[in-house]
Image (cartoon, rainbow over all chains, first blue to last red; front, side, top):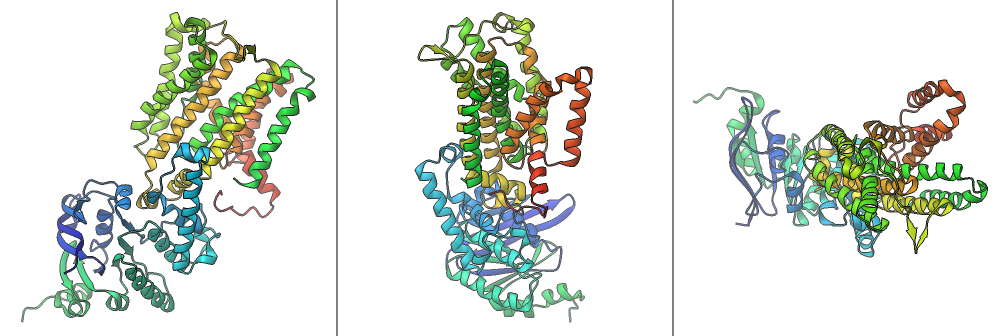
Length: 258
Length: 318
């Protein structure tokens, strides 16, 4: 059994009377690709928002490599080595593709207002490093000749890839992808699944929220199924696929105990 | 640094260098340009605060006042050297900006504007009421001029000092803007959610820029006090804070050059409208309204759009 990267215990998130996440337990092992699936409103994106600290949990614990995430701010969590993409694209529209990825280096660099203002030698070296690493990640995602284009002027599929490049630039140990395939055509989706596998090869643990079942079944080591904030199944893709409760949740069938 | 920034800087340096010759040593024109420089120092900081940190300050007249009164009070009452008083003002402004900014910049929205409005009013009262030190409403006079190696700096030399500082701080500001810090602040503008998720601690940089802008304003205040040698609270009222904001908005917050342009135009405009006598205020208001109606992003960006006829939105300030 390999090491646990993420350990979630009795996690709860209530919005008023709505139980978005309710008493959720699961773990993510190092080097895994773990998919989270479930009908709309099942709490998948809420789960990502809790892991990345966008809002605090109502109860329970989130541990990343033995470190409690509960009270940390998003920027602290990013520095610990968790990065993400967003379901609704959150690129910096006022910047180029390259600059977007350069922002990913922020937590790994240090120059403050004083060093930057005086352009001290260390700061210039750091700036070169930021640019090199950003180009590397653009190249990894096949976007190297989009570097100087405005981020939001790219076609949707490339914007999605750009978000992944930006997240990779933070040198994450755990990468959360929120519906990376939505809006992509078949060929783009195929390429995406290849890319996710290549990301795992770099030693990065990946969590994916995705509706495209073909993609999920192809790449996942492990699948977690949520419905109304609760875990209804967890395990190997082929087992989950046959689980009656999962089928019921997706197709809306009544469970008949026969 | 970008080439066009460098050329603009060179152009300014040459213009200022030759100006005393062109003006034939006329004190009036020299002092006008000195005031433009002093106001530019403040608006440069404000422009970074508004354009990059997305915050509005209604209290920069107060930081300007802290600089001016530090220089005035310390040199006249406590026999400090002007340079020492200048540094004391910077120090005091930075500390106060930190204390005001720390709690308010954690909150989203216009808390900074409200907090600085209150802070400005408090300082205005302090300047008025602390009469043993500040001379109260009737002001503080007899502030010595700045000296360099025992020689008082006057006329063209003072112009060079003020604009030398403007150019140095412009360089500093441009470096900050074109760095990790400037990039982070622009990212916060683009999407605060994503910026945070990439490890950007937005409130920290907002605070740093606020403190920097307070330091710029304090330097301007000290230069002002030593130049006109007499200060009174009315120069540091809310009206001046609003005038400073207007300079930044009229010039445009897209780049820091807008702050210089705005400071120049708004400082010089009343001088050129003086011939209109009673209609001066009317014309002043009308000009500002026309500018903001037809160039809502400021004159600099407005002119740029007119020149490049395409008018398509530029992407990413470099």
